[in-house]
Amino acid sequence: GDFRVLEVRPGTQAHEKGVRKGWSLKKANDTEITEETNMKELFIRFRQIGAPITLVFETSEIEDGDLGGIEEEEDVTWTYRLKREELCGYRSVGLRNSPDMKDVAYDKNNNIIEIGANQQEFIVIERLHDILSAQIYLRLEDGSGWVFALDPRDKEREIVELVG
Image 1 (cartoon, helix red, strand yellow):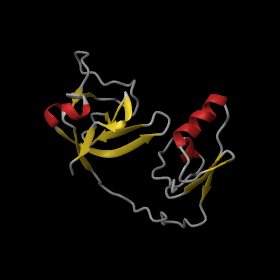
Image 2 (cartoon, rainbow, N blue to C red):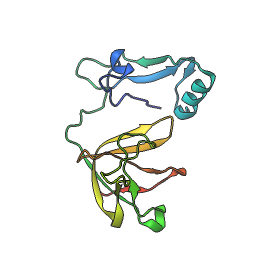
Image 3 (spheres, rainbow, N blue to C red):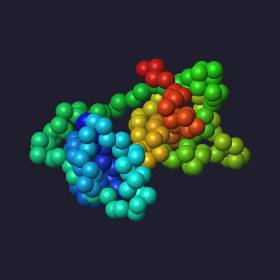
Image 4 (spheres, rainbow, N blue to C red):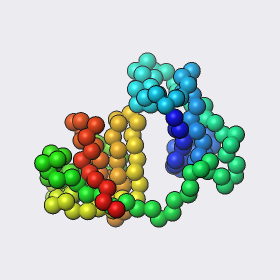
């Protein structure tokens, strides 16, 4: 498998340790990373046993300015909408302040802010896959927050669809 670093955010451990976009993950502790590796299960197992995680990256092919086949994307956006209610089970979904299911966004009247009613389209500037929760979060272009892309009750079922 190709487990390449797609983004390194400032202020994270990866950024502080000098991890660079384009590096490929080869080992987590003593586990070789292959196409069959289930990263979520691997990290959950490490967390359950309380093991610190040591990651080994392949960096030899990455030169300054070369992202190892990953192109730098500027101003890339995607347009999504909630699938029809009969397909996904939702009329709308609650917005999140951050990519965290518990961080629900509320308006000034303390009502949950919802998005996606009547198949309203929304523009996304970032897609984040949380390995531990197996959820995919979509950051909205207007800065209002994040939307989850998978049904929290069944992470195999997408509740949004890409339309552009």
